[in-house]
Length: 309
Image (tube, rainbow, N blue to C red; front, top):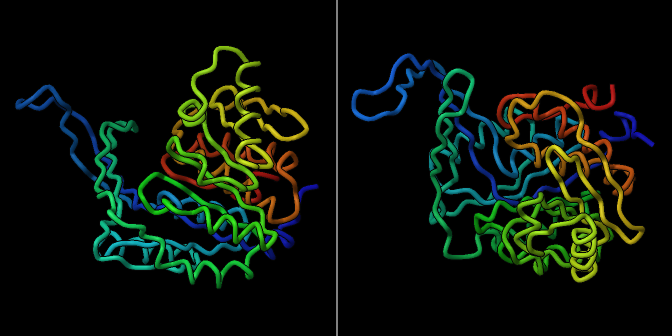
């Protein structure tokens, strides 16, 4: 059952995780540098977009649900720009500030509609940056219908186990976009959404579909997770739950840019589960949303009309 736009607009999702500012320098490439065998890009346009958990929040907002973003940023120019962009998009925020943290910036240099170079500006925090926001999380939890943790492995979600426990105790669906090899900290979540490379980090590379099924289900049971949603690029996605496996083929369309596709998938899953769908019901729509967004440039989002129209 597809929720109506009006029903979706009544649902609220709390997004917690690592945010970043995506910068794009667009230009033309007419020659090779005389200093080294690299292209010279003459920059003609600069662009800024929400990245990481902020892009996830934007995807939920664009789809039509209400969203609150809870995160910590640094005391720097990038954080100021993030605040401006979040306000422009009408995203409610609970932003902590940590002077020891450098707000993450990903700068992409684009020439001839192709990404030529990406430069990352970040530092690895030496402390739990979200610990200061635990109180805000507990206050926001009763006001929301679902919780989404967007883990980019940047240190913001080192200790999320207690937050997952609180959300599940409150009866909220909890979805996690995981990172790294220690999935024990995601124990008890409703759904986790690794891609192939991320899952292989945890269970090892598989050589057959039967081996994948065995390992994915074993991990799901071990973590006490209701469902594991594996995104498989050109092979679509597979959902593993107590009923077995469900497959969705990839949506046939030209792939322009895969940046942020995982953000779109988990955003759609969470918004639809907040509206009452279970993971199996939400998966085909999330798969379609991911198929739409890879046809767009850069970190992008999908509207209700695009997804269901």
